[in-house]
Amino acid sequence: MSGSAFLVWLEYRPEEVKLNLRELKHYSRKGASGNRVNFFFCGACGSTICGTMEGRPSLFLTAGVFDETDWILPGAHLWKGSAQKWLQRSAGTLDVF
Image 1 (cartoon, rainbow, N blue to C red):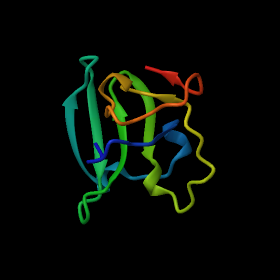
Image 2 (image 1 turned 90 degrees about the vertical axis):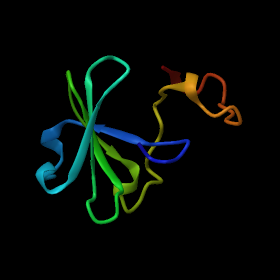
Image 3 (image 1 turned 45 degrees about the vertical axis):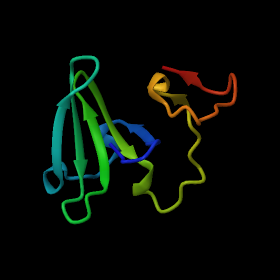
């Protein structure tokens, strides 16, 4: 959760990332799929660092953890059905889920 209309996640295999999740604060909730979604955040400032999803072996890092982000290219829109009405999307450029 970002507190914004947008959240940019980058998906990695856990072995690709050096991160000690035990050093972060976290909360967990049931996702729309019924599986648990876990969010890990900085205990000092509250910034979301990463997330995991039950049943999916990935680690999702937020774009905000990187010093430079101009190399990031979005691959899909997720939860487009709950997007802000003012958001315009370029037709046909990204997969929509």
